Length: 117
Image: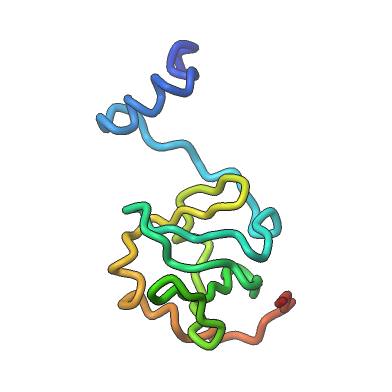
Protein backbone atom coordinates (compact mmCIF):
# COMPACT_ATOMS: atom_id res chain seq x y z
CA UNK A 1 0.00 0.00 0.00
CA UNK A 2 1.43 3.38 -1.03
CA UNK A 3 1.37 6.22 1.44
CA UNK A 4 -0.31 9.37 0.14
CA UNK A 5 2.58 11.61 1.24
CA UNK A 6 4.98 9.81 -1.11
CA UNK A 7 2.89 10.86 -4.13
CA UNK A 8 4.09 14.48 -3.96
CA UNK A 9 6.63 15.00 -6.76
CA UNK A 10 9.58 16.72 -4.94
CA UNK A 11 9.50 14.21 -2.10
CA UNK A 12 9.25 11.29 -4.53
CA UNK A 13 12.37 12.47 -6.39
CA UNK A 14 14.32 12.64 -3.13
CA UNK A 15 13.21 9.16 -2.05
CA UNK A 16 14.09 7.72 -5.47
CA UNK A 17 17.53 9.34 -5.32
CA UNK A 18 18.07 7.84 -1.86
CA UNK A 19 17.01 4.41 -3.14
CA UNK A 20 14.08 4.21 -0.71
CA UNK A 21 11.45 3.74 -3.43
CA UNK A 22 11.74 2.58 -7.05
CA UNK A 23 11.64 5.17 -9.84
CA UNK A 24 8.24 5.69 -11.46
CA UNK A 25 7.43 3.62 -14.51
CA UNK A 26 7.84 5.39 -17.82
CA UNK A 27 4.60 6.80 -19.12
CA UNK A 28 5.23 7.75 -22.71
CA UNK A 29 4.89 6.44 -26.20
CA UNK A 30 7.44 6.89 -28.97
CA UNK A 31 4.62 8.46 -30.99
CA UNK A 32 4.60 11.36 -28.51
CA UNK A 33 8.20 12.18 -29.44
CA UNK A 34 8.32 14.50 -32.45
CA UNK A 35 10.91 14.90 -35.17
CA UNK A 36 13.39 17.62 -34.22
CA UNK A 37 13.34 17.00 -30.46
CA UNK A 38 16.78 17.19 -28.83
CA UNK A 39 18.23 14.00 -27.28
CA UNK A 40 20.46 14.23 -24.18
CA UNK A 41 22.52 11.70 -22.24
CA UNK A 42 21.87 11.32 -18.53
CA UNK A 43 24.87 13.60 -18.01
CA UNK A 44 22.77 16.34 -19.71
CA UNK A 45 25.14 16.46 -22.72
CA UNK A 46 23.53 16.85 -26.16
CA UNK A 47 23.61 13.60 -28.15
CA UNK A 48 21.59 14.60 -31.22
CA UNK A 49 18.08 15.20 -32.48
CA UNK A 50 15.20 12.94 -33.39
CA UNK A 51 14.77 12.32 -37.11
CA UNK A 52 12.14 9.56 -37.00
CA UNK A 53 10.86 6.31 -35.50
CA UNK A 54 11.34 2.67 -36.49
CA UNK A 55 9.20 0.22 -34.51
CA UNK A 56 10.39 0.57 -30.91
CA UNK A 57 13.47 2.58 -31.87
CA UNK A 58 14.08 6.30 -32.07
CA UNK A 59 16.16 7.39 -35.06
CA UNK A 60 18.61 10.06 -33.89
CA UNK A 61 21.01 12.20 -35.93
CA UNK A 62 24.22 12.58 -33.94
CA UNK A 63 25.72 15.95 -33.16
CA UNK A 64 29.42 16.60 -33.78
CA UNK A 65 30.99 19.91 -32.76
CA UNK A 66 27.59 21.57 -32.76
CA UNK A 67 26.47 20.28 -36.17
CA UNK A 68 23.83 17.63 -36.75
CA UNK A 69 25.02 14.89 -39.08
CA UNK A 70 22.16 13.24 -40.99
CA UNK A 71 24.49 10.53 -42.30
CA UNK A 72 25.50 9.55 -38.76
CA UNK A 73 22.33 7.93 -37.42
CA UNK A 74 21.63 5.92 -34.30
CA UNK A 75 18.71 3.65 -33.54
CA UNK A 76 18.00 4.16 -29.84
CA UNK A 77 15.76 1.49 -28.27
CA UNK A 78 12.78 2.68 -26.24
CA UNK A 79 14.27 0.90 -23.22
CA UNK A 80 17.16 3.42 -23.24
CA UNK A 81 14.83 6.41 -22.79
CA UNK A 82 14.64 7.55 -19.18
CA UNK A 83 12.12 10.38 -19.65
CA UNK A 84 10.71 12.89 -22.05
CA UNK A 85 9.71 16.51 -21.75
CA UNK A 86 8.28 18.76 -24.43
CA UNK A 87 11.05 19.04 -26.99
CA UNK A 88 13.61 16.86 -25.18
CA UNK A 89 14.44 13.19 -24.64
CA UNK A 90 16.68 12.07 -21.79
CA UNK A 91 18.53 8.77 -22.19
CA UNK A 92 19.51 6.51 -19.30
CA UNK A 93 23.20 6.46 -20.36
CA UNK A 94 25.78 9.27 -20.56
CA UNK A 95 26.72 10.78 -23.92
CA UNK A 96 30.21 9.25 -23.87
CA UNK A 97 28.71 5.73 -23.76
CA UNK A 98 26.35 6.24 -26.69
CA UNK A 99 28.96 5.42 -29.34
CA UNK A 100 29.73 2.03 -27.77
CA UNK A 101 26.12 0.86 -27.32
CA UNK A 102 25.81 -0.65 -30.81
CA UNK A 103 22.99 1.69 -31.77
CA UNK A 104 24.65 2.67 -35.06
CA UNK A 105 23.08 -0.37 -36.77
CA UNK A 106 19.41 -0.45 -37.77
CA UNK A 107 17.09 -2.93 -36.02
CA UNK A 108 17.44 -6.49 -37.34
CA UNK A 109 13.83 -7.14 -38.25
CA UNK A 110 12.21 -5.17 -41.07
CA UNK A 111 10.41 -2.08 -39.75
CA UNK A 112 6.64 -2.29 -39.58
CA UNK A 113 6.34 1.44 -40.05
CA UNK A 114 8.96 3.96 -41.09
CA UNK A 115 8.44 7.61 -40.32
CA UNK A 116 11.24 9.85 -41.39
CA UNK A 117 11.68 13.51 -42.24
